[in-house]
Length: 169
Image (tube, rainbow, N blue to C red; front, top):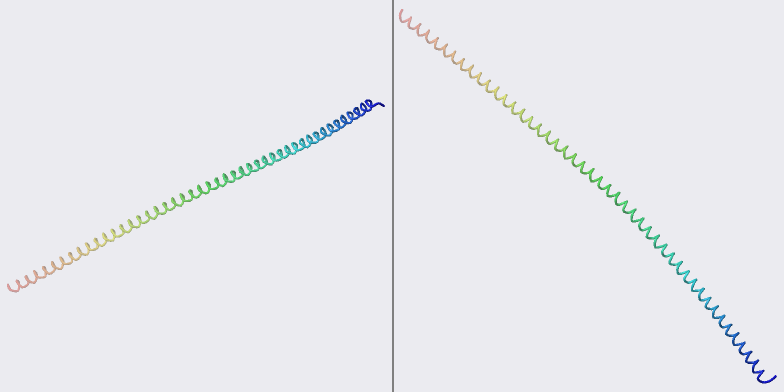
């Protein structure tokens, strides 16, 4: 073989090896890029799954918080209504006690007024009775004195007459 043929064959072989090597390098690069892309895809997939899980947890937590907030509001409203109910019951009881006390005071006032009037009338009638009694006693005494005086006068008159008759005789 001649030299240029050998050179040609060697050049061909080198070229073939270079292309094979380039092909292998490209293949390896594309496989590596594919693996990188696969890993990126898996990373993105994991990232989105993680985001989805985080969003899901966030919304579950937000839902739980809203649910707890509304339950708390319901409890607070229920307690507020119970407090209002107790306040109105207490107000009703106080009004009831106030009116009972007012009624008792009025009742006591009228009883006191009645007893005072009763005592006043009793005293008035006792005084009238005493005055009448004193008046009749006084009248009786006056009559008694008058009759005694009359009797004395008559007695004196008769004595005087008797004396005068005696003197005449």
